[in-house]
Image (tube, rainbow, N blue to C red; front, side, top):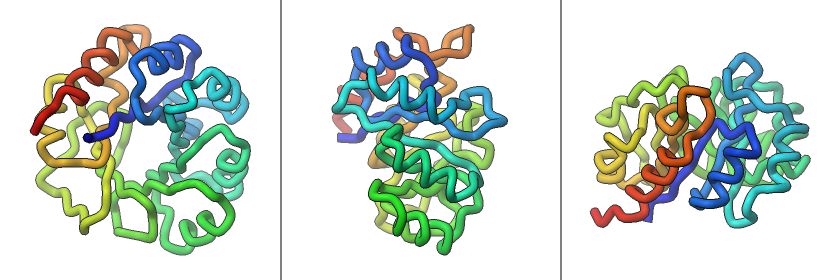
Length: 192
């Protein structure tokens, strides 16, 4: 069964929603110039309230490696997701110094645990060009404009996980309970 990641979590209310509907993963964004940015301290605070069955993923974009290592080793996250130009050497060094899986946004296939297919500018809600997917037999997360309106088509591509954020937000910019509930229901009930 395809797994679900709800990205851009930054409040207790959103943690409560996730605990209620149980996606497989949530994402904390550690990219300072992004609207959904969260500090390590806030992520640690929210992680205390997160259902232990839900894995937290730290989203990074060309962050200094020492910052990624610090956050990974703090216990705030269970997986690292790299969205920038982090190359083979960066990832090799990172994997020697942390003991959690690494997801790498597709640019080149490097030594990572999972690939991620997303738009070059993540978090904008624009649908990724699914025709360009070449997974090289690696499990992958599919992101980029996935919503209740197209998630069934996304699931037909057999990703390891679907990753949604902006399509699940209300007018206040935070996750909307009904949208999260419906999105997870569609994925869990998919029989393709």
